[in-house]
Length: 441
Image (cartoon, rainbow, N blue to C red):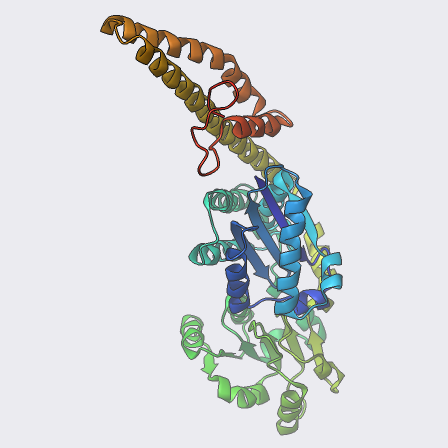
């Protein structure tokens, strides 16, 4: 059995490629359904955020590092991802990283703890991992292995936050963006702001702007109900999506994070707003991937565009100041504990299979003996059965002890797999078939 993770992130690919491979929820559902139809992927969870697209799978391959299993899943993933996102398969493949077994576990624990984010200590990633797991569970692609892994990962992320306060130590993406806006446009409280989107980033933006004391904040969202709820909580304005052109004309500062597939603020819309109110729109902040704002607006006189590409260097500078050594120590310890538990569970299964097989042989041979000697008294018959079982128990005692010991040692999974192969369930239709020694395989 093999645990794999494969995918790309801001560490491996330029933001332009991440933008091309960004997946919407319907995209993720289609991919999960495609994996569900493939015998090569019995369990799968797809994590798709603005800075990463990663697939976690559990396969039935016998060898822990079976390259064929990884290649099969990788080919399926690249083809599906390229088709959904429109990226070139060859370029996409060059930007993907494949991790196996312990490395895959440690990577997931690192991601969910915010240690692999564009901004170290990202508070949103744990919710995104939970949402990815829940969606996969709803589509029927989560089995016992990934269920246990992702439940453990979410607990690890919470532990890292509780024990290190890593999230509080790092500035959020919104804060960094607003700091950049203040450097370009002066004190923000003098401006009127327009926030597009009321999801995680949109809500954080509205809250940050409200705390900054802006004179006017308007929230616009395609679903009016969520925008209205946010507006009530903060005491700010709201506008419907068709009213976006009018709201844009009143704004000096725009923050956009809608999650749309295509730009929602085109150059034409911004030109229209500036024509209606010359000198109005000064700074536009695009926190979305794919982009919400047409990059061409940066060519307009007096307009400044801030996007993830421009913020990347600043985010890395902030991240470097975050104390992360203790967080990595926790991740390493949790990874080791998870692997030990998994190996012990596998060893327990092998031990149960070995004992079941041994006792099946005992029952078969005792039954054969008693059938040949039907005149044995009942007391003797019972003693024969008990003696045979004691012999079998003594014979498998030392292998059982050693298997428990070796299960937690480096390379111990090999011994467990051998015993599973020797004593595990037979293929359908062959159970109970005798081997050359008259017993069961």
